Image 1 (tube, helix red, strand yellow):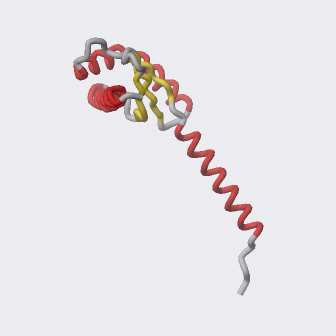
Image 2 (cartoon, one colour):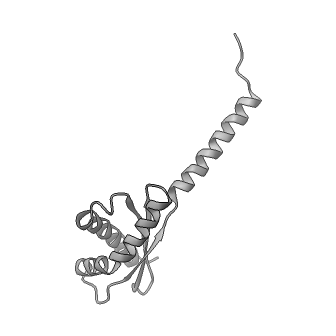
Image 3 (cartoon, rainbow, N blue to C red):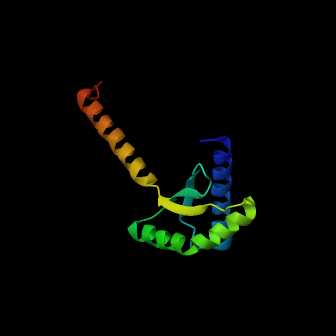
Amino acid sequence: MSQRQLRVAELIQREVSSALRQSWPTEAALITITVASVAPDLRQCRIGYAVSGDDAERKKARAFLKRVRTELRATVGGFLQMKHTPDLLFTEDDITGGVARVQALLDDMARKDRAANPPKAD
């Protein structure tokens, strides 16, 4: 990824997160913008987001982001001042699922370690 792509992606990530907090504080309270990556031609930007909550909250967040996508694009376009404003594509990051899997693996390793090395009675 080129330096320009990285800079544009970072700016878009920051601006989308800020716009969500300022314009829709209650709807975006559980949404965290985690990553943004821009295509080499700077015409598309894939934005990763995570939602704190259950499946119902994720579904509401997905519908919300789909609904406000064009407004966010206009906000980003005014901020970036580029010839072509990138199209924003939102993809959900499953951070909580990954954390839960790692925690389960660590717990399993700890149980196996305790079974292999029982505590010594003094």
